Amino acid sequence: MQIKNRKLEVGDKAPDFTLESHNEGELNLAWYQGRKNVVVAFYPGDFTLVCSNQIPGYNKLLEKFDEFNCQLFAVSVDSIACHVAWAKYMGGINYPLMSDYYPHGEVAAKFGVLNERGYADRSVFLIDKNGIIRFTDFLEYNLMPDNEKLFTELANLK
Image (cartoon, rainbow, N blue to C red; front, side, top):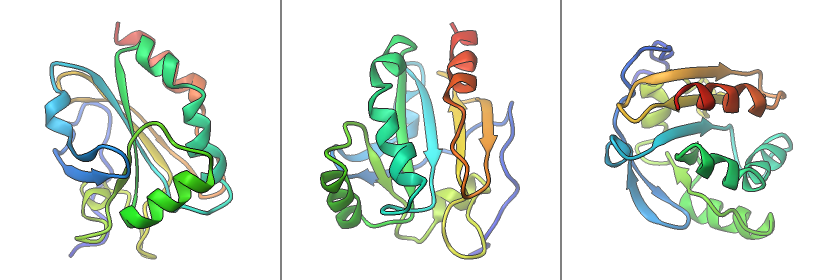
C-alpha cells in the first residue's frame, strides 16, 4: 500500500468510502450526495491531547452544522472498540467516529493524509452536496482547526 498519495485540493472530487462508525454502523460518503454537505475531519488518534479537545468540541457545534445541512464525520485509524471506549470516556460523542483501521489507513491515504507513522494527519475537508471538495485545512499535529473558517466556507455554499 502506498502510504501517502497527493493531498486532495479544493475542486477535486472526493473519493467515495464506506467506514464503520462507533454509533451508526457502516456509513457511505456517496449516500450524502444530493442530500447534505459533509465535513470529514481526520485526526491522529483517540486518547491524545489535542484530539481530546477537537473531537468533543464538535459536539457543541452540532446544531450549527445542522443549520448548514452538513453531516460531520471524524476519521482516525483507531478501531471501533477504541472509538466506543473513547466516546464513553469523553462523556459521549453524538456524531460518527469512523474507523479507518482495516485496511489500515486506506481512506486517509485516498485523501493524501496518511503519514509515514501510520496515522492520519490532522486535516479537514468540506465536501459539497455534489461530492466536490470546497475547503481544506491541513494542520500540524499540535494545532486545532479553525472552526470559524470552516463555518464561513459552509455559509458560502448556501
